[in-house]
Length: 138
Image 1 (cartoon, rainbow, N blue to C red):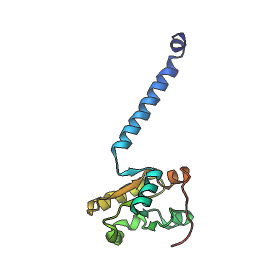
Image 2 (tube, rainbow, N blue to C red):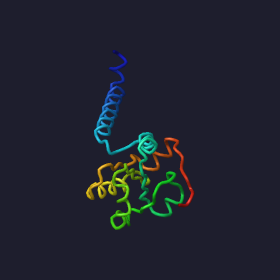
Image 3 (cartoon, helix red, strand yellow):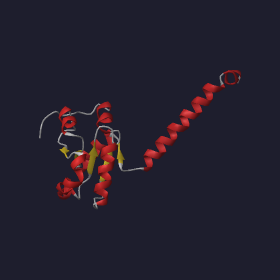
Image 4 (cartoon, rainbow, N blue to C red):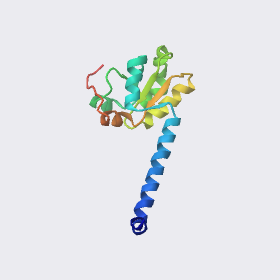
């Protein structure tokens, strides 16, 4: 007890950071459209999900998820019809950090696609999780 009285600020910091962690976990578990790299891999392997990379050409050329389709964010609305044949399959969108792909996911949902997911943290989290990256051109 004496330790807590002398170091109350450390205890408060531990409680605050633990609370923030629980809040973040609860928030992310409520949004089923955000996938971790492991969840994305499972969806690709189990349900033949299509991966669409919305980064620019230079970013895509530096490395991308194997067999992903490239549809840059700047051209996404105009070219989203190219995904029509995959309407009944899960579609995972990715970018560098998950921001551009979240906007593209919204575009697909508005177009009536139901199985649309965003790779949480983008390719940055994908690589951090130790998942493979391809540099092959399609």
